[in-house]
Length: 87
Image (cartoon, rainbow, N blue to C red; front, side, top):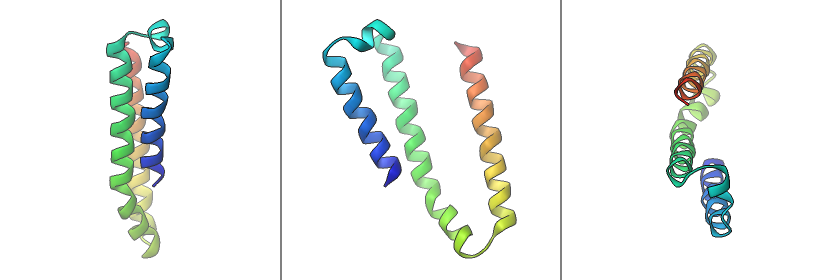
């Protein structure tokens, strides 16, 4: 539910901001589309991972959950570094 709400908010914000030209002052249309695509993809991945987190929490699989959260943190950091260095 949270991921769907965030994706909906991003689409609504993009639709409203695009109407008065604020996006064009900050970035080009291709960058804006890429930003929305990455944010929507992140929301979908988060929503897809939610059942696994609930299963691990309900069954007290703490070592596996800690390993998964650590791997997610490393993946997030590497992705952020790659995006920053690419820009």
